[in-house]
Image 1 (cartoon, each protein chain N blue to C red):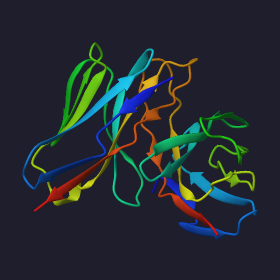
Image 2 (cartoon, one colour; image 1 turned 90 degrees about the horizontal axis):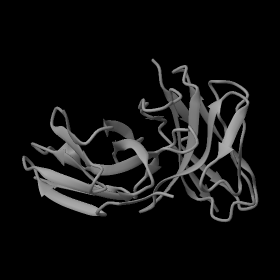
Image 3 (spheres, rainbow over the protein chains, first blue to last red; image 1 turned 180 degrees about the horizontal axis):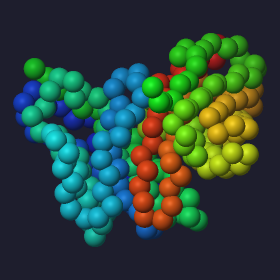
Image 4 (cartoon, rainbow over the protein chains, first blue to last red; image 1 turned 60 degrees about the vertical axis):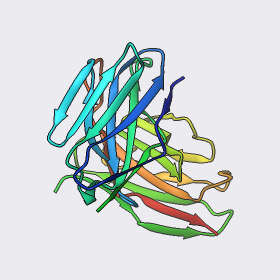
Length: 112
Length: 116
């Protein structure tokens, strides 16, 4: 099976940089993705890492290290609207299907 | 506008009643999914369907049933056998993923079910 660990909560101030870590245990997987969910809303896709290294998309970057079973989401120039929950998900190699397993999520609170 | 719709947004039912949650998409996606979200639990997979007239159990399928008679629709029935049905239910769809390609999931707005 697969398991993922994320911090339950992270706080930061507006304008700062914050890193949300994700460690996982899985026996082979396609990649690691990140989703954002505002309170009571639908999760939306942020990024996907198929290969080791850093993927940058505007203020958000995501990193993967398969050898360390570790990834992170980096948010720069934090804004109040970034207050949300962030989920990492692994996409395991499982019988040819493609079903992600989500972590429990990290609640990011941005203070003025 | 392409997207996924779920209805209703809020649903209240009495204990012991079956209830069906609607999920419709016009994205022409082959794959559809149902997740349950509880506070602090993340998203847990209930059922998924990769093609019309076929579906598979996820991690927590007990007490739920689905059908996939049309590509656009994937309704979820929460039966009276589900011991703890009060939760936030999310439907998602994606292009069917194969091999190393990644296909993001698009989520609906969710249905918050409360069983009294």
